[in-house]
Image (cartoon, rainbow, N blue to C red; front, side, top):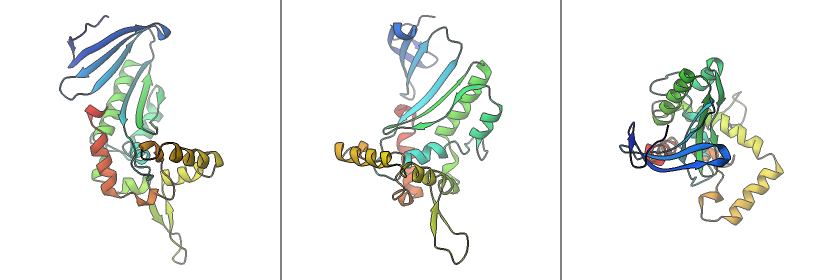
Length: 225
């Protein structure tokens, strides 16, 4: 179906249109009139349906807030009040792809399925997760996915623990990761690219609940998607 420039479809106005030979697709750039959200639609004959909502999330320190938030929004939302809806989706969905990724300057939440009903369900869960996560009413989400103090025995010294904290400890056990980290700091000083969006183990415990919530309210909005 051909869509017309400047015409509105389901609340979106077509701003640009072009045919892309390399992927045999009709490409449309749309803008949502109410929220300002931008949408890139690729129409073709592939029956594998793919959706991704992505946000511009430039880091301002090494605490890994973008990475921790990527994990945390998938730990329950306004509509899906489960501990880990993501895990339940993996069990029962017919998805062909289901994940989330943090990059140096953006965060992406892509899903795919060949089944139309399953595809709609996946989109519903992910959109509710990113816009209405339970992070504001459950402070333990940051402690679980980011960092918390850990002690096994009363005589033991305090240590740090957490999903992202342990993940990034593993990443920075590699000499290549350390070299890349220092190279980015040297090449791109005074920019978001000088920081580790995934989080540096030394800095992750500096992330507070207030900064965590502020990052979500700042970047997780339709006009920034």
